[in-house]
Image (cartoon, rainbow, N blue to C red; front, side, top):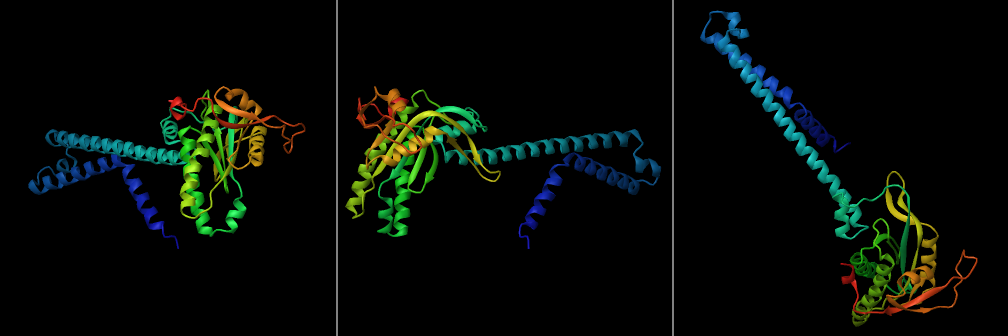
Length: 320
């Protein structure tokens, strides 16, 4: 049984009424015409046919005026109703768009997309982006010794912290991968200092987790330690998925490299690629690592461990 059928029928009837207000206005005018004619018949039996048709000038002009008034009323009502319906539909579309982009972008950027002030290309496009992967170390062991409900609550609290930091640095959440997260700078929104934003966000995550873990330890819970990998390069950005569900993402070798840098990062370590280091070396203190052999790479690559900022006073405020 279709429980929505009565509601659908009701909406259909309402739509028929609102889409034909001009005709309804004409119909009301015709009804008035007939009623006026019949009243004229009862008041006077002379000139029966003229009373019905209203061919006398005194009658016909009055009825034409009323006919026009009803037609104007109907057209105005239909125009007003259609405008309100279009406005309501636009509000629904904007709300859906806002909700979709707020899952990816900071609220301010999502609002710019909804208002049309920021364009997000729906087709694939080549962009230079900085990709960051964050992954919890020892998560399997932690999960084995903790109740599932506690693990879920821990992940929610953990992601709440990370997402807030990412949005403060105006990054884009690409996806959550179990206990890991992928973040993009440079797509769909680009800034001239995207690599700097990414590394700053990584340092803020590391610092915030220290406070987060202090609270966990005080409650007798195990601390959370993460490894972070960051890489910058040319990627293909766009919407991926099926006709039923799609999400914005980037693909390309720089993404794979960032993921593998994250995989080899020790607890609390932030590893950046050579290209990212070239861009941000004046803003952060780094330590060059031994050449790293990554899966899928024929030659070892250079990588650097980030130890801090060259000017600790610079933070989120430098971007605004």
